[in-house]
Length: 385
Image (cartoon, rainbow, N blue to C red):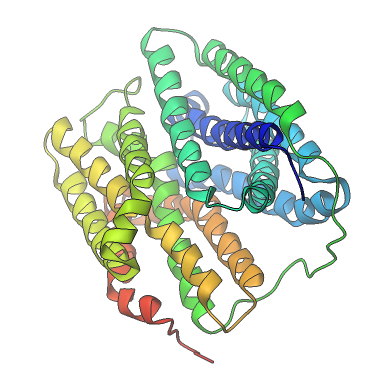
């Protein structure tokens, strides 16, 4: 597509705002989880089942988003997804029963899933039109949104505002951002009639599995980090979100510096040392006896994990086992399954062996990343073609 420089700048701004809203919206939910658990007196297993509703709603919406974006363009899907997040967020704070919360979380997940897929489709179009790399910067804005959302909600709750009021304030912020983005988003549909789902194979299986692990860790920080430090007595309910705030700050800084780091040390070293640093962060977090140590653990996990996914996507585009577009799609599906569905499983595991032990399991899973870094860097997998 041919666009003027001003149109390209407007489209980049709209894409950044879309990523910002997605990160902001999902992060606003993190500090609210302890309140929802206490308000409805939920067991860990029940809470895990409710968190699964976010994943179910997201996956269902993701299946529909591709065809809708192909037919009508990504703009209407992005706008409806962003405004949907803003509208449903306050509902999460007033649901009278766990069944009502489940329905609200299904809607929340559907809005998030449709926005996530559509904004990435839009980002590819904008990057192609600009003819220069932009994707890392877009994803960094998702991290900025995550920090801003968790910080804003935590601060509002710390001021003594009711969760309902805090979510209304954050919802208005998201709606304003989408109103600014809407006229600047690219319009028009596509005639792409490619397959909706392709099973990964070869090295893409390995890449997909690693993406699922890394996104699962990020989802665990979002959904369970506040409860972990609250149960260990390191933070109050009102200040539980500070852990994810620290994680989000570290991940944002890591992503902003990621291109330079990869250029300096290479993909393999980023995977190896990023995985090692994340594992060390889990150790520090789970052995912490003071809040400063716990926050240091959150920071190390964020720094270590920040550039793992970009490397995995880069390797997916370079492998020859599958067409690169299909490989990237497979990895995206696995990643979102990890971040949205995985944390629900943590609830069931925590109900049986305890939340702290469940987090030790996450550290063991993350260790798979440095252990397989040489395979990924060499383009090898369990069934290399």
